[in-house]
Image 1 (cartoon, protein in one colour):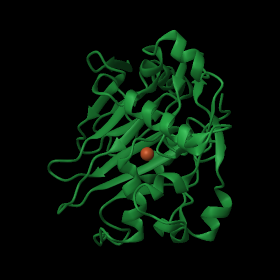
Image 2: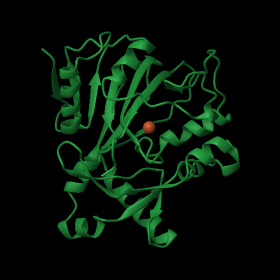
Image 3: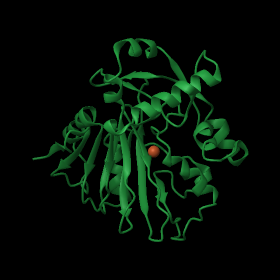
Image 4: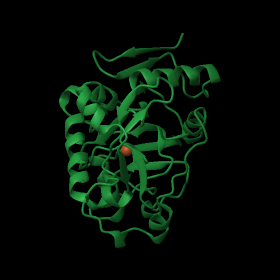
Length: 284
Ligand SMILES: [Fe+2]
């Protein structure tokens, strides 16, 4: 019998009795979606799956998102492969464009908020880990919203925020001329609500990311100050869970109600993570 167990007093859960070599049934997929609404992040441990099996798992939740970052030199469009070695097994130099692009993963963010239809669920599989893997941190944006005083909540509801991929990368030293023309044309800045309602439970959460630039109708400085203040507020230790990876873990998270960030790893051991996802249906 499959089930989910919360990790202590957190928003993070472990799934039990799933074998992801087999594509989830519609009933199992619905149970996982309900768990994501309840918990935000769900870990499936010890899942030695291949790319086809990860693709099939992803497809249980919608049309798999295409990985379209030309900057990464990716050979496939099913996955974003993250780590410190390239497709041929060679170390990715810390000054390469790929490394620069990936460095933005160290900033608190929610995946794909620079898209009109952001990533709804992200799936990340640990294919190969160093002996002491860097943890991934998650922030509970629903709990952060719930903890705000009602008067503060009333000030924030209705605000809209501009998100762009250039904003997160420029914070890590990348300049606009380092993006391909394709990326700049296909990913113009987009607007999203600052406060979202969950499509299943209807509960509210803050929607922020390193991609968040400023507030629509406000001056750049005032809007950016609000974005920075709220990200700092929502990533206090009381809202954060740090996950320690073990080999072949697969995590799935709901980007509409969480943020996450990578933590640094400088080698020397190979680290290979494989990411897939599905798009949001509507941003509300
Ligand atoms: Fe991410």
